Image (tube, rainbow over all chains, first blue to last red; front, side):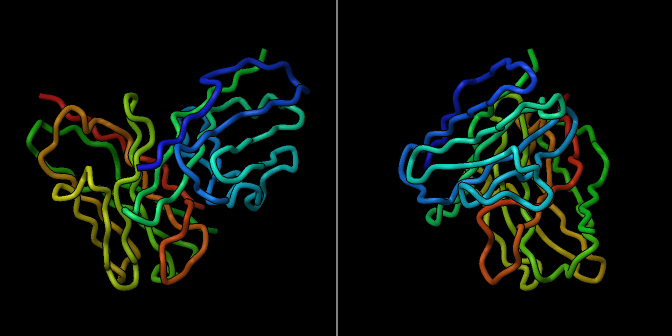
Length: 109
Length: 123
């Protein structure tokens, strides 16, 4: 089973600053990685898929990069509404399995 | 617009079963796989199973095999997830989620989510 490890576990950033979140896979997943945003009491929301493709309606300040085992989600200028927990997720063909990272909690300083 | 509306929360006793529903609207139901994902404080987000809404074929994570049953009723665009032999470890919010893109194989990620259903297992 592929394990996704996210870092840091939490961080506090000032509005307007750049934020970089990391997701590391225990073995290569190619570009098969997605990022989700989850606000309290809500379902996760797809932000990025295929490592770098923004989902429909996602602001341009969110971007994804990486391939293989190292991936990054970047928020170019943090807004107050970006406070949330961010998860990475990958799909494994065999055994068929979707796995998530443990999440990074993002707070406003 | 795509909507997935789940049934309400329930409290169950250990050893019981629970059945959660997910009613889809705003798209062609049979064109997309639907998944069940649960969220617990201890394990985070866990994928449980998917169903091909057209054929009814299912697949589940090894962890839940033998305990989870996913079915669908195409006449009312609804998917069901039944989890048997509940323990306190099954206390979680259960989400249904739809593939982002339709296809003959399940997608790699989840484009739309239900609102979640809290299942509490307690004696």
